[in-house]
Length: 459
Image 1: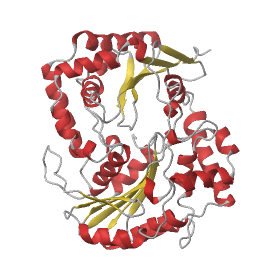
Image 2: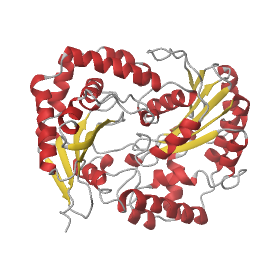
Image 3: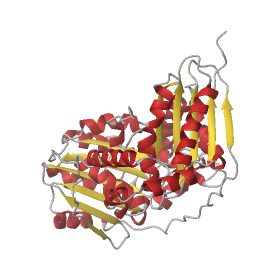
């Protein structure tokens, strides 16, 4: 995530270092008294008081991700994740991070298919300064040739390390580009080297002027603050920033897939990998939470927080695919990923084959386990366990002001905070029949794309 696909693991280390508000030991997420309003310039503001520790988290979510890019112009949202730290009218390059560090805080940023976000967790006394910093770069970011050149190289190097160098690095991009023929989920947020190298300053400035405006953003403040006072401070710092034209959201819907798609990468490597992708519902769709239950039964519950899900490994020992693949010695690891998204996305299952195990054997065992779910559904006992595990994961999702703010900003951006607030009730309401119906729709043979990374035998 699940922060963004590639920067998320690094972000987790900072998240663990962030001040964490202690919470009562409970298996229920806290009830949230959320304040929400919109400034005249269109800035959406979400505030929540949490007085359990003298800290505050400030997040700015721009409703722009890789799905808002177009062919030949990919990687721009990820590029701006970096450019936003290169200085503004009153802040020098890298000074933003230094000011946060000087007050004892931590910060990070992330890009995904649907969003780009920035956050700081600091002592509550530093709220005013954090709002000033975020407002300054929202209203006067320095986008010039020197900054573009330096950060473009940083992003290209990240792409080289994450995609081009690992033997299996291109497996995920190819699965997505094969599964999505029309929708702009076709490409990953990291973009392509060719598009980044071809980008001009005018291209980048046009992208910035379109999407990094107050009427395309959500500001979240969570922590030891008075909500009314926080609103006044936000109005003071952000109210004078001019809005831009409403960004165009024209996207081609992905047509129904009518047949299995396959791809194979044959390249030198020491380990074979399999990734299966099934077209899956968006976060607001009726099948989303039944599929979340199915994922918990198949690969272990992960929760809904794209940051905190990395912190605690899913409980897998009784998961069906763990038993079918890992316990039988066919795979050394198996995982599932269902990401809440604005538009219908993919549910992916990944498996790492054990030494000398052919991928055909791994795939056969995987598909047999999924076919069994389609034929028989899940049991009441599995449903009960999955709900209990997900309920616990939702507690992890809200165990700090940083996590709560992330959830509020994330879900407000992809469809509204009610998607987050209502998640426990929607999970609790799932029946075995609804899970079975979702399995039949999602795990159909015609709905899947299967990718192999299959290195040739060693000489």
